[in-house]
Amino acid sequence: MKVVFATADLPWEAVSGAKLRDLGIYRALDAQADLELVCFPIWSQPQEPTPPNVARVFPSPMPRHPLRRVAIRSAATVRGRQVFQENLARLGAMERLAGIVRETRPDVVVLGHPLYDGFLPAVRPYVGRLIVDLWQLRSVGARQRLHTGSGLGRRGRAALDLLVLARLEREVPRYADEVWFVEQAEAKVYAERYGATVRVIPNTIRVSDYVPYRALAAEPCTFGFVGIYSFDPNLTAAIRLLTRILPLVRSHRPEAKLVLIGRDPPPSLRALVERTPGATLLGDVSDAMAALAEAGPLLAPLEAGTGTRLKILEATASAIPVVTTSLGLAGLDFIPGQEIVVAETDGEFADALLRLWQEPTLMAEMTERALRRVELRYDNAVLHASVGRALRGEPEPAAGANG
Image 1 (cartoon, rainbow, N blue to C red):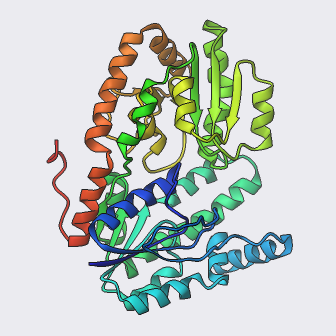
Image 2 (cartoon, one colour; image 1 turned 180 degrees about the vertical axis):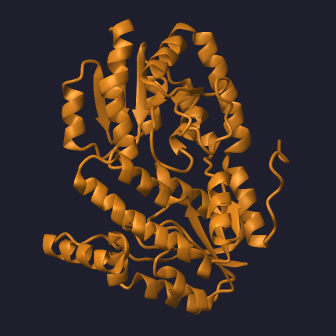
Image 3 (cartoon, rainbow, N blue to C red; image 1 turned 30 degrees about the vertical axis):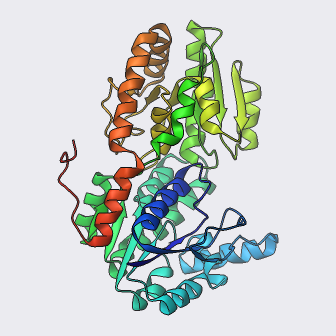
């Protein structure tokens, strides 16, 4: 079977988010099909040498000149597109992919996030089966930002995003034979709303990659958070940790320390860390999981966002204790209180962390149970099996059939 997989970025050397998902799907397709990978790098630069089955790499960065960027933003607003989609259209990305598909005539084309708008009608005439990895309902996140965003600028952008994303989600089933999601709840909502054929392809990780982190010792009375801080839910969580949860923890344990890890921290976050006792910002480190393992438990007070949180899968695979909200646990099959601690209020987060520090045996038992869960349900082998069934047109097994 010949498959073309198109992504907006280079999946190898993935460290988080969409790139980790693309990497998992790339490996699954490569193991089970004659694969050609086509990349339109928006956020990263191509690296040499590229893997042998990469048909084309078309760098697609936003222009540096301010006036050209303004022109693209204006055109995107007029046409009801996201800015990077307008830039891809300007560069002819849709036509390039359509040309490759027309020449190679694959059995299946899989469009990875976020290559939807414009790519769907361009590719549809030349392929028998078109699959879209929608991943999650991003309109839900835009609606959350609309209601919780601070300032007219942020809410205005959220309103525009909501209109664009809702239209995109509505149009995908017109072209796609199957739409992939990471969790069952959103897949069910989407199928009922638009009559689409859906499949759950879970977010997974290669659990064996995280074995080395399990031997790293955490600093005493230290906890951490990891994320990309240009993503609003992560920034909001970091600010909550700094301004509310850390001071509460330090009122009981004055020596307590918080370590923030991850790229794109805005100047406002850097300034807040500098004036917060006990806080450290490591920023974009070469190995985020090693830094988190040395920091101690992961506290993730997430209040917005959709989809499964890969940071939680990575932490549990690294034997790092996790405390998060019910939203942070959404779509993940962990048992609250036995494998991961669920907290909502600042006091619940502080109490959970203090208890983990005070009861190391409890902490070890929870991390061991969580590790067993991630090995069973969220290893890449699970994703590989689901992708294989999708390529063969087979249904997914009933929930619980695999234990």
